[in-house]
Structures are given as C-alpha cells and as structure tokens.
Image 1 (cartoon, protein in one colour):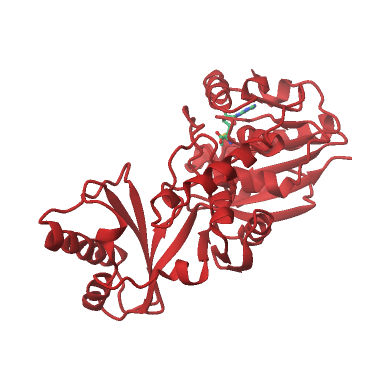
Image 2 (cartoon, rainbow, N blue to C red; image 1 turned 90 degrees about the vertical axis):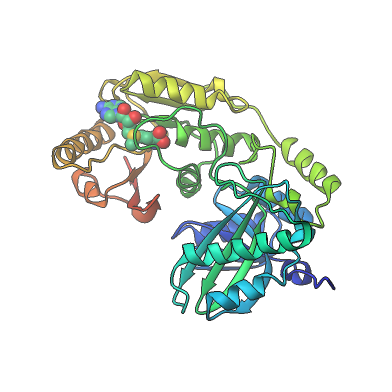
Length: 383
Ligand SMILES: C[S@@+](CC[C@H](N)C(=O)[O-])C[C@H]1O[C@@H](n2cnc3c(N)ncnc32)[C@H](O)[C@@H]1O
C-alpha cells in the first residue's frame, strides 16, 4: 500500500470543537497558545499549528472540548461510498489490533442522515481491514478507548479525523464528587474567561455546589494547565508523535504554575455535602486546599465589598421548583444590592426566565449553553 500523507500532515490543519457562542473566546485562546490561520465557524475553530503548538493547545485549552486532526476529506453521498473510501485509510498502520477505539460522529444537511449508521459503516471499514490483514480485529471500547476517531459529514462532504485530545477535554479529572446540576468544566471556564478576572480583587462563589467555578478560577489564576491531571492524549497516537517535543511543552507549561495568595478565592454553599464535594474536587489541584469553602446560606454571609462574585443559582425544571428557584433568585438580587456594594457579579442562569426575577439591571447578558440547556450569563455592577 503506497501511503498518502494524511490531510493534517499536508497542511498542519486542525479543528477545535467548542460550545455555541464560545467561538470568539476560543479564537483568542488558540491564538495565544500558538495557533495560526485561526478561523472560527459555528461551534468550532479551524487553525494550523506546528506539532509543538498542537500539544500545547491540547494540554492547555480551557474552552475547547476536542481537537481533531483530519485524516481524509471526501465527497460522500452514500454509506456504501463511505465504507469504500474509509478502506483507503491505512488503519493497520495507525494502530494495533490489541488497541481499542471508538467513533464519534455528526451528520448534517446530507444524503446520509443517520450519524449512528454512518459511524457503523466506518467501524466496519476499520475492522474489515484488520480482519483481512491479520485475521483478527481491534475492539470498540466506549468507556476508555485507546483511540478516538471522528466522522463529520456536512453538506455531503465527509471528514474522518483522529481525535488529538482523546477523551473530551472538559473532563479535567478534578471532579471526584458531584452535586445535583453541576456545570460543565469548559462552560465554567468560559464564564471565568468572560469575567476577565485577573486576581486584583477577591473572587467569591456563594453557591459553589461542587466547586466547578472555583476550580476553573483557581486553574486560571495559578496558570494550571487545563489537562494537568491527565496522562494520556490522542496526539500520542498520531503516527508522527514527537515525545521529546511533548515533554518540553509540558515542562514549560508546568513551570508557569504560581501560588495562590491567601483568601483570593473563596466559596460557600448552603448544603454541607456540596461543600464537602467542593473541598475534595479543589483538593485534586495544586493550591486547591488553600481555597476556603464553608457552609453557609448566602443570606447569612457577612457583607462582601469590592469583589468579583460568580454563581450559578439553582433552577427548577418542575413547576414548584421553578417558583422556589425564582424566589431564591429574588433574594440573591437583594443580597447583592444591599450587602455587596462595589462588587461585580456574574450569574449563570440555567433558565433564562430567571434573569427577570433578580430585580437588578444587567450591564450585559450573554447566551451560553450547558449540556443542551439554554442558559445565560449576566453581569451586574453594584455601586
Ligand atoms: C446549580 S447548583 C451550583 C452548581 C455548581 N456551579 C457546580 O458546578 O457544582 C446551585 C447550588 O446552590 C446551592 N444553594 C441553594 N440555596 C442556597 C442558599 N440560600 N445559599 C447558598 N447556596 C444555596 C445549592 O446547594 C447548590 O449547590
């Protein structure tokens, strides 16, 4: 088999997946991490990068959930053609049959309409090539695969990629304990990014739940790489992986980690179990044990002045719970107004209707989604 270079090898091009409305933030982040020809599109960013910049991006991005290295692009109007073309990729050169894999797939505006069936055809092409060459095949492992491949078909153009991140990058590894309705780590990172908090003022989450916003604020201030707790990345399975470059990139990023000044980040929650979860999660990260988290209703906190307040109030899905959530948000509005003068608050509402219940005028509102829920982040200045 004459080996054609893969698409990413020809032009160093990659694609980062991000949540809706996070594209401009991700464009800035990717550029700062060394990406070039950065081009944001709906829920993603195209960019080019050297291997060094690619490893740095995958290790440090707080906002992107996956980074894909395209192997092959082609026009694709049928699953038969998808199977046939997928067979031209030298899968047996890419990995061993003892390794496991999984396929993530998305299909839109195309003759092929079912992403699951399309991914089944790609899986068949992969295993049939192994069967023919070795008389044995690699297995699919949905939980902990060695390799993740991505199939994206849009307007009858297919792209098959190797996922250079591996498992989704929002899984930082610090979440050991959870509470009801935690926010996703990359959403929390987007919220912290939008606050533009730089450590000049104290940051407080008075409804911290399992501490996701606190963990992301800590990682940002202390410059802890987002994937600091991870050992394995998809780029390690790329055929041209450069282990020494990766070791250098990691060492350079880890050398940037800095101390947390005492009292700079604090949190509280009404629920004891949430406080316990937040302490455990923070404790996974460098300096996390220095973030003081206590049990208290926000209504009983001492006045907070000149701070940055971030919070994600509960929202109810059921009717009774909706009324309760609305009343609580009203109380939060009055707490901010009367006890937090000189502070700036950023509140993430899982339900947009709740913004109307706070009784404060937002300086701005930005839509941000959380696992399929249409939430909104609102900024309030308390003079
Ligand atoms: C949506 S959860 C926050 C989730 C959090 N952002 C996370 O990622 O884990 C809302 C939190 O508000 C807390 N809460 C409800 N009423 C409160 C009150 N009066 N004072 C302080 N916390 C309260 C709940 O215990 C819950 O942990």
